[in-house]
Amino acid sequence: MADSPLRLAAIILAGIVGGVAAGMFGVGGGILLIAFLVLVLGFEQHRAQGTSLVALVPPTGLLGFLEYSRSGYVSWRVGLLLMPGIFFGAVAGSWLAQTLKPRRMRQVFAVLLFLIGAWQAFSAWGR
Amino acid sequence: MMVLVVILLGLAIGVLVGLMGVGGGILLVPALVFLMHMDQHLAQGTSLFILLPPLGLGALSVYWRRRQVDLTAGILSAVGILLGADLGGRLAVHTASRDLKGIFGLFMMVAAVLLWHKPTPAQVNPAGRNDG
Image 1 (tube, rainbow over the protein chains, first blue to last red):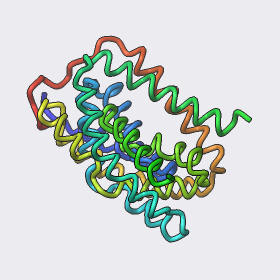
Image 2 (cartoon, helix red, strand yellow):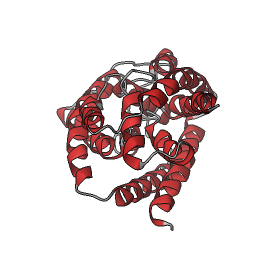
Image 3 (spheres, each protein chain N blue to C red):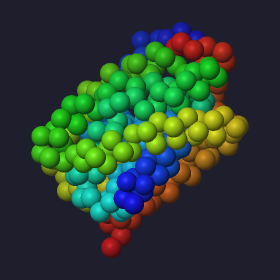
């Protein structure tokens, strides 16, 4: 299909929406990006996830990170210790993803998202 | 002991990164708060720190080989995220962190329900293309 200007604009908008969440919550922004790519632009789930990983390659959170770092809100030691595990774990996770059919992949994604979301909402307001 | 816990936590989060195609912050932030007893700000700052290097690159190569990557869309999204993250950081200052956390949780739950109920995925992009 052709990359219409409208579609390209929609993708940038999706990035901005994901980015607002990234700066606010200290995350990568991939969650909202994937949801947008699948629900609005009709991406198949695996393709949305692979595309999200591209968007996460450049250090897009740099501006946000600098703000936190200036205020002393970074644990360097824990951060560095987490990195090797995340890299190798991510390779294993992507192999796992390839064993799932697209529809099942979307359901696994949705369930994990719901559980983490429920955990966050509950821990904020639940008690 | 704490070192081992953190490395194992990294591994567990990595599996989620590859499986879901996300950055990992979504699970890392709550995990740091609960397991490492960090406060919300410290957890979020540490999460942004681990997102600086491209830790998902190994996972990306797996998706890439299966032609499950839209390069144009990915790059455009990165531009948007860079801009949006700046705005998000500013907005966050004016909202209580407790409410932020709760709102984000609700967002995820709504997105999850929408994704679950989505009918058969519309195959907009023809299979076998790596570029947009």
